[in-house]
Image (cartoon, rainbow, N blue to C red; front, side, top):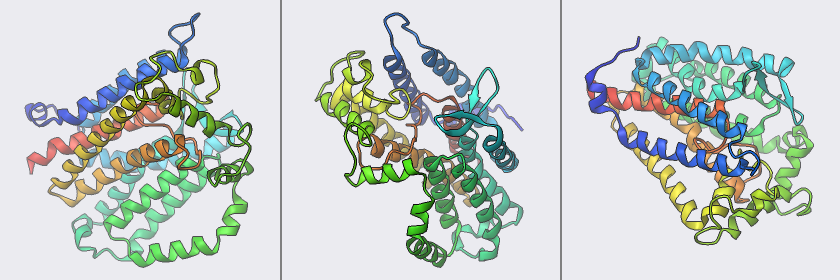
Length: 371
């Protein structure tokens, strides 16, 4: 199952790995900065994130060495186990700010919904593999009935996550799953019908949202008091804008240090970075993410088999969507939905899942030379 071959070191994608490590170190720096106190230089969040990075890199290299087909098979059962964990989370999960999204293991809390980002694409790929249909992916000969089981599994996962409630993660998993199914060959007519259904049922969907979720959408449209409903996004914009070109300097961000900016070490850590390193720092981090995704795209385009291509797209899509949503959220271009910035924000489960996905992508990058 796990193989150590010299060719792994030869074909290992060092470019994506180095970019990943740089992003991890930058994120750790701003977890330190956002949680720094004169009386306690190294906060518990910084210490946990450090341990998370070390253990996450171990997960990364494990995912680099497990064969792709074994990884996919494990992911199939992993997604089923994740659905069970999501059911338990709703019943006996750790309640934080009115939401049950975490399971407590006493020494650590983890978020089962994050696991769905990793296991869902592996679940879908394994299901099609068992039907002996991966070879038909690019010719789009898979009948619609073959998509029913993956659609049901996707729908169950999304509904369970919405029940926590966690709209942001639910949307990422929904769109990731639909994008993957579209690539595999889901008929365009399905997506047209789905779009029409959502449009017609918009009033009912609006009423099904929690009051705070409705408020966040209204804030995006310009409604709300800057001291109440709009407070979070307004403080984020102030932090980003006040950084100027070069920023105020590390540990010198007033929005952060005076505690005006909520969730400064998780969802809004990019705002902290912008205030302290300014426009130059923001461009540097965005260019790192662009470089990482460009490298991933170049890997995907050179994969010789449809099976590995599907796995790669499935692993990369949630990371890409999370980055885009988080950056849009902190700048006020998208509603606040509680999505972390991958490799950057504090959050152990998100960190592990992201590194596992990137490790799986590097695994495929290595093995593409074997065909």
